[in-house]
Amino acid sequence: MRSLTDEQFRAWGHGLQRSDGTSFAELFDATYDSLHRYAMFITRDSDAASDILQDVYMKLWRVRTTIDPERSLKALMYQVVRNYALNHERQKKRHASEAIEADSPSVGFDNMDDERLDAARLQEHMDLWIAEMPERRREAFMLSRYERLSHEEIATLMDLAPKTVNNHIVLALQHLRKRLESYQEN
Image (cartoon, rainbow, N blue to C red):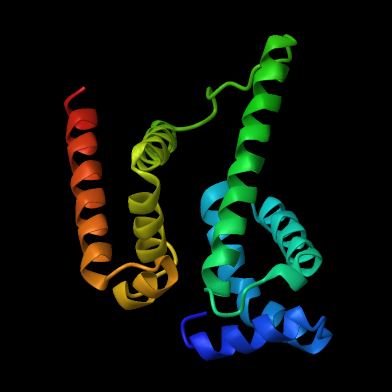
């Protein structure tokens, strides 16, 4: 989604307001892969990410007449994907808790080698540490590190100054570094 301009998104926004199927199809084709990667970052599940995007594009079509083309359609789409993906993760955790409470057989790590177990634990901690960050800092960090967007692209997407984006990312990295040092000491 890097090469897409604000003008293209505005044009698609105007097309959506007019219920133009061609604009919707172009927007879908241009944004799907990037939004899928973003949903995958949150869910770590390709099928779930695909389902989430199906819901996101359906919602986008349902609210098409209320879209303000002068506001960032790109930011709106990332926000909706994030919200749907986080809702999915909350539901998944709730279902997992219910399964444990229902005395379902527990999954053991007996067959998993120590390195994979350590890597899985570290990834869980990283996810928690990222989740601890303030929302805007977490979003800037994820867009930078997982979506590989430039600071300028993130600034446009989040409606921030590039320097503010840089500050968010620096603070996020400092936070993760401190958490990792504490984790390694234990």
